[in-house]
Image (cartoon, rainbow, N blue to C red; front, side):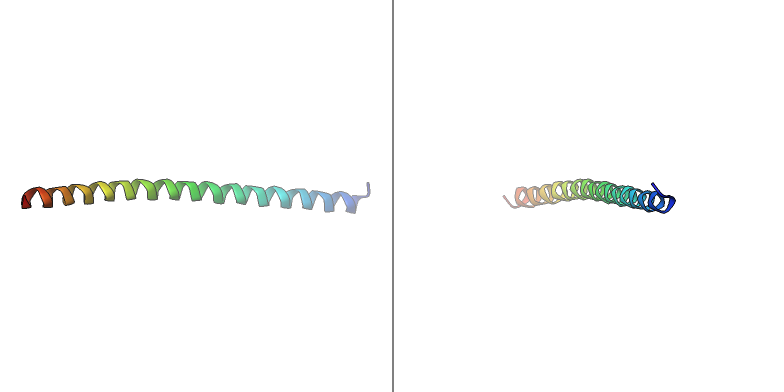
Length: 60
């Protein structure tokens, strides 16, 4: 294989590796954000649920 062919192949392999690394990083960040959002929504749901129950217990 000629030197220029080897360099082109190396650039393609590095490009694919970089593309996959960025894709994995984006997926990881997305999953972390999803987990944080789920925890926040769960906490908010609990707060609203308790306030709702207290409101109707006080009325009856």
